Length: 109
Image (cartoon, rainbow, N blue to C red):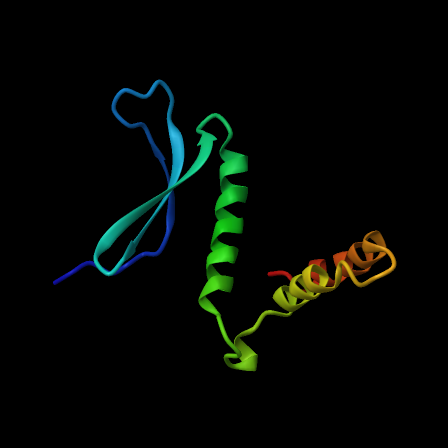
């Protein structure tokens, strides 16, 4: 019986011949283990955790392609998409980002 997939993890990895240890993201897809380097040294775990959180959010957004179900879309993602799409159409990009910041804070998980 195979083991359950526990999802992506952030792990320190030091490959043969390397002088330093780097954080990697590891996950399994179709019974194959995948690795993605963060490029962040183990001396800075806070940056690695931030990178990992952003990587997970980006991965979740990429999975939800197409219209999908409305109850599966995060409001924070809609706000970020709106800011990205309309940044060139507004009089002041700074005003748009300032207005979006409290909404993103409220709707972020």
